[in-house]
Length: 108
Image (cartoon, rainbow, N blue to C red):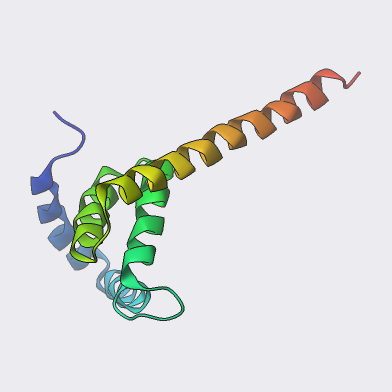
């Protein structure tokens, strides 16, 4: 079994049947965030989403947001840079969590 398969979206129907109000609320929230332009345009929102998807390691999010970013006019170098920004933050998070290991080591 592969973890990520584009056919997995069929399970959204099951989720919607099991928790319809919550799925509807999530859909409305997602539409409010991505469906309208506010202070950020669609291209910028999608580049942020790609960076977050890289950090959270969500392959479904990556599929959806790279496609949307391309439609919104994002370039391949912009997508690559968004991923590298996320990579730097993830690495930085590991580094600063390492401080906690050293802090704990110093405890009696």
